[in-house]
Image (tube, rainbow, N blue to C red; front, side):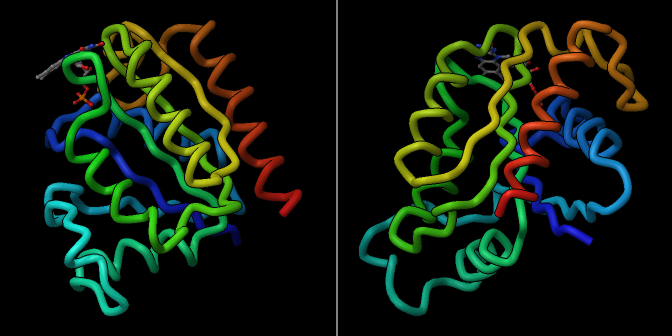
Length: 173
Ligand SMILES: Cc1cc2nc3c(=O)[nH]c(=O)nc-3n(C[C@H](O)[C@H](O)[C@H](O)COP(=O)(O)O)c2cc1C
């Protein structure tokens, strides 16, 4: 069983990105155990002064979840032409620990438009040495229903292809 750790960039309870994480979980199917990160809102503000050998528990837990996973899903909206601050904050805590180095990551931007966040997440994941399979889904809310079923065939096809790349990256070690 491959372990997948899923992070949603949205702090909303009823989140479109939460639905996309569920849809990706379905596409991954058997052989993958997906654990969702409870809330990025519980991660403290990044501070280099606190980025020590024994970090705060929330940060230590985050890093260990990333390090122990075979692959990571990040699904995020765009806020004000960039990544949500909470997600950027979380990623900043993983720089010194190199938690993402060599790690397969499926990065999804499910937003109204999302081009800037899409470029940003690729840039960040590249600099922290993740192996990235990325996809932008504009008008994302209109393409998935409340049961996390993707209702737009073209979106389903591109997401399947992104999931295939992610799985190949995990299996190729
Ligand atoms: C404060 C705020 C700013 C936003 N700015 C953008 C933006 O710049 N570009 C965009 O595509 N969508 C923007 N949106 C729309 C969200 O990305 C969109 O509603 C998305 O589906 C929310 O995903 P979620 O339900 O997973 O939180 C913004 C939403 C909020 C609340």
